[in-house]
Length: 305
Image (cartoon, rainbow, N blue to C red; front, top):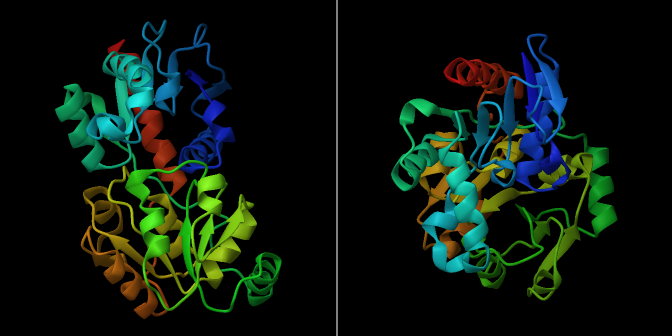
């Protein structure tokens, strides 16, 4: 089988980039398909776009689309500027031979909002990359020194180039806490104006693993997620997690984290500060598992074409 794989989002430093890179590496470790990195699916048997921006309205071969969430549809008022673009992309998703989602919560959203036949939707969870494991003390100390961090701090990880209301970073920064808060990710001007936080900017995977390992806990205040990869990565590094309870996070994390109500940012910080090591182990699911299920999705898409 010859698979056209749109690898463009692999350059993104956010979760979509992590998904693209890790899945592509795992697919290449398999010997049952030829993976061609291209956005032109002609001369291939199936086309997989791991992001909605690569979905084609008239694909020349069966198309598989990974749909990470439907937040622009569920929260239209916050995504007015990109509404038309997403409208066309969602139309393309409806024409896909098969759709991959990271959680049952997103599968239910897709069935409800896009009318997708549940038989054409497969849940393929994400996983922590191999680099995320407890780092030795010398690596943790080096990253603390590099970014001027104290011995004890709370951590948040994500994109900060522009405000995202569902991430609630500004609320987190303004809330009272006893431990310093460190925000990791490429940051725009608005983030640099947040009070009382330390910004690291963009970091390497090795630095991020050390930042996770050195943190007292990860705080995850999002009120909407399609999966939630940073908590999985934090647990893989042995770091406790406190999160606001949303369906996709509860589905992927179960009892491994400290849960608080959506409207309780103060409670979230209190739970994070009260967290103790060792953290529970992350889910046993791996990127090789994800690649195996994805490979079967390709076969099903070709068979339905």
